Image 1 (cartoon, helix red, strand yellow):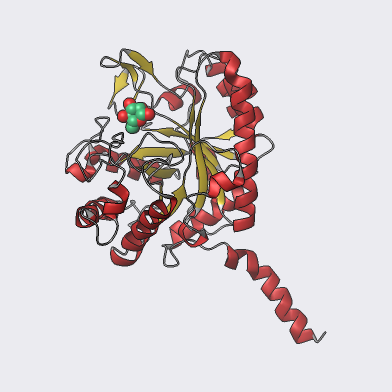
Image 2: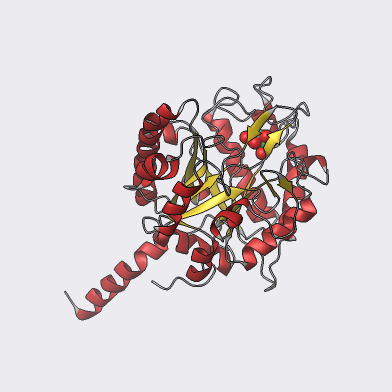
Length: 378
Ligand code: BMA
């Protein structure tokens, strides 16, 4: 082999992982591309710990500057902050859980300034009948949102609203804040209008692709990484049933909750491990990030849940992050206690701290040190 040819092959080999692992948006901002590459490289080395609405409220408090249940327990904010955009499409000033969008914007800025990651879900209303995300009475909503459909224009208007909110998300450094966007989540279940029984796989994929095309190419939003997110699955084929293709997904994720008694922990742990095994192997093959979009056990009654159930389900796998759902606390309407992250004095708090101290879970200071928005170091 000539020296030139071997040099060329050598260069190609060195470049190929970077070339194969491209963001859905080739024009994504530098910070967005860096975040993607850093999360990819982190997989298997650390699990970033995330929490929905962390700065907004917790168990027994709401909108108190500087507070966070996780910070009061561990001294640190989470590494990943989840926010939900439902009601943005209604032009309302607060989201479905009462978080004012103005405040949300500030929290997102703060999280970015702290070096943490922001992710969006969107429990979007049913555009066909104006009911909520949980309305499953119509089997044609997704079809009617596609080009030529009855509510296609309405959907474009909603995406315009999304893009306007999103484009105002600028950091103190003047840069557009990168966001992991997880639309139409838990699609392998049938509790949202975009669910498994509510639309066909082809309709789901078309809606996904249209959404990306519109945000990326029409609205020129270049700060988004796209997160695919089924809930239950037990085989690779099931996982991929509604997969829109490698050109449309940056992060592979799923949602998984433990329900019922503590003794269900073993089944939950095994389920977690199986899902991660399937997803990690795809992520490796497709050069994507693997993550857990949502996870939790309401009220965390198991004092060893983090070490014995969650960590044991994860330890042989490579999710880059996990996110636990919101700490709403007591909900008068539902008359239940609704929280998923441990807080000071909570039943599982010591066990969580143990995992945190062993660096199994990384919180805000850990990610600040890694500098996820800068060019990857190694
Ligand atoms: C659910 C619950 C609801 C909430 C919704 C969207 O799991 O937490 O109370 O409205 O998520 O955040």
